[in-house]
Image 1 (tube, rainbow, N blue to C red):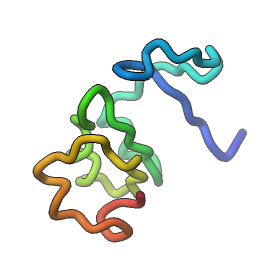
Image 2 (tube, rainbow, N blue to C red):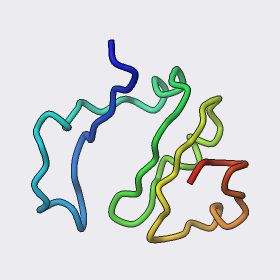
Image 3 (cartoon, rainbow, N blue to C red):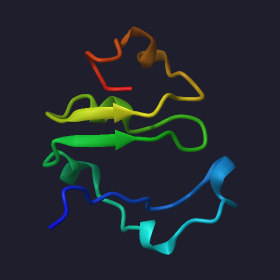
Image 4 (cartoon, one colour):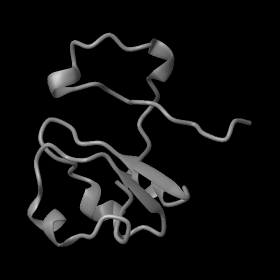
Length: 85
């Protein structure tokens, strides 16, 4: 077993024409199954991460890629407290 099992389930928006190694593509994981992981990386899609608010309710560390677009709920969050940038 490796320490990390990471990948992308699809590439969209501004990156959809970027070549990607097929070994990095994985099947999507339903949100309710993500709760078993200690850490979850959250990357925005076309505009924002629709799942970010839900992930904050899990008992996991959320590693957030700095977003291009800021959601209303994001403005009240403190980096290093509510998520890891």
